[in-house]
Length: 166
Image (cartoon, rainbow, N blue to C red; front, side, top):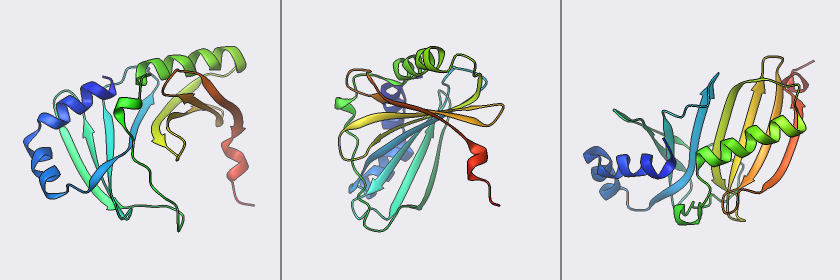
């Protein structure tokens, strides 16, 4: 499932339509996908934030169901939340994942990921794919993919073990 398909499913949903009427000041702020031992995307989580930037409502969309939950936004003080304009996203999730997979093969060929986290976000400079692969040995591969042209903006490797407390 790609983002545009998930949005079509969501926007046809009566519960979402009712929610959107009551929350017209909310806008898309992120798209989140988590994959475990697979590259098949069957669920897409779409996050909507209010203009005050203090509340987020997320919708989990698959072909048969739509789930919804709301929470306060966890962010640094004075951090601005930026809107995602889906019209600016030319590289959908499958292409971004493919680019990250190829980058893993090129730059980190000895690593095998077990979990993949894909996040479409806007950090104030336009929409980008922030993609993280986690390996069985707790290594983390991080890729930023341009959502307009699919270019690899950044890649790095680190370890989850570096974050452990002493």
